[in-house]
Length: 340
Ligand SMILES: NC(=O)c1ccc[n+]([C@@H]2O[C@H](COP(=O)([O-])OP(=O)(O)OC[C@H]3O[C@@H](n4cnc5c(N)ncnc54)[C@H](OP(=O)(O)O)[C@@H]3O)[C@@H](O)[C@H]2O)c1
Image 1 (cartoon, protein in one colour):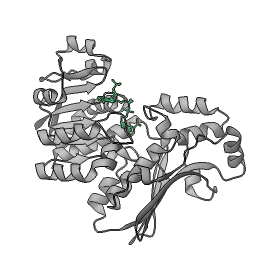
Image 2 (cartoon, protein in one colour; image 1 turned 120 degrees about the vertical axis):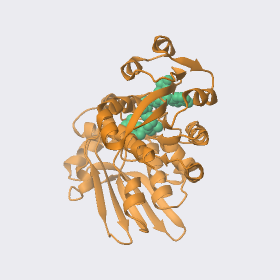
Image 3 (cartoon, protein in one colour; image 1 turned 90 degrees about the vertical axis):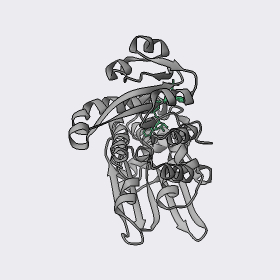
Image 4 (cartoon, helix red, strand yellow; image 1 turned 180 degrees about the horizontal axis):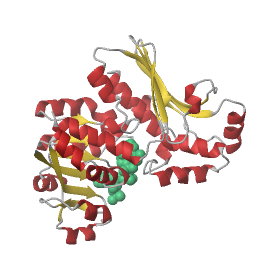
């Protein structure tokens, strides 16, 4: 049995659910994987850089909402990230701060410093994958550590590890899919007669909306997911700004309902296609005929279909994931890293 010290950066929906999942899977982690764990560091803007070298009590941690709560929990607050790393000594850092579409920061700095410190870096944040994938991958390899990000696309469904571990030497020619849960929840809500705002609130209550929901509505989250997939599984550098993008802001409830009644509902469709100069990619609302499986994907569900040089088409569908699906992707990454 090896004890891993864990550091959590960002303590919102994802990392809180990860703490619950670590508790739920504690016995399997120990018995099947020889992993014991304790959370020695946690941070967010509201709570600051908190450390308890002996490990926080998970239930107390889940109740803590601001820095004052850490005083009675054996927590010590540090002024800077570098001090936090030195004090918490994490073997694995889980980066789950809010998405920054433009630069991927400060998540890239968080991950770079964690790897340089000698920790594995696991993230649900797409920013580092689209803005610094190659640098962080090479840094991790050079340090004998892992940089893993399974939860960034389709929650915990194994897409990146599917290609990395089981489809060697394959060429992805194109993919298309529905990759943003929030817009899919909104479109489904509007089809059922809810207003745009009521449907958005539903997505926020489910915890699937971005911290800034305009990232979802305007197609940025989907564009970033497309860019992450293109960067990693098509090995072509594509910044999210180069993904042709249109969100769902301009769709009225009436247009959404009449499209559904006509048998071709609106979906926010992601596409990427290899071409002679690289890859062209788009995110756009499209009307999809009910004969296409994509038309049946509703609510938080998502779908992706790949075309490869070997398999003409294969499809992965994920039905009604919640936050535990995202947290599971990070947990699975952690087990992979711990076993490496
Ligand atoms: N929710 C999902 O279903 C889902 C699924 C897949 C991937 N993701 C990705 O996972 C990440 C986290 O999502 P979430 O739903 O957990 O978001 P969230 O609930 O809004 O939590 C974000 C957390 O990050 C912290 N944070 C933001 N900027 C920070 C900074 N500069 N330094 C330190 N902490 C910072 C926030 O701190 P304060 O609250 O103190 O401001 C908060 O604790 C995002 O990148 C998202 O795209 C989410």
